[in-house]
Length: 138
Image (cartoon, rainbow, N blue to C red):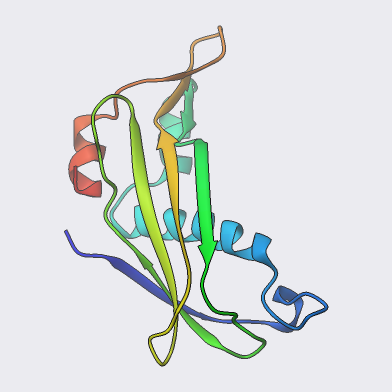
């Protein structure tokens, strides 16, 4: 399966007083990108939750992000999301890269997520359903 790519403009309110993108926005953009990727591949978390009252989505359990070069107001960013990696067990990893139009790497990061259910005793990681796994490239 290929990378999922989305492009967006850096807005004024994305920047900090140093006039560069505030670091926390990359975390938000990774989360938004994950949702965009899953929806584009036919995985709709709202529909899954409506079908199964115990489903809790794909909660984030670990995160890292490294910053390579600043992005500024009015830059166009390309967000590249690799197909999820399923190293075994109940967690999966999603790698993200943000690039400027000239190809320079702005930031790169990785999310670790689980497939979550709550049976009344709290959130638990459970195996991802086979049809969802296939749509996400596992």
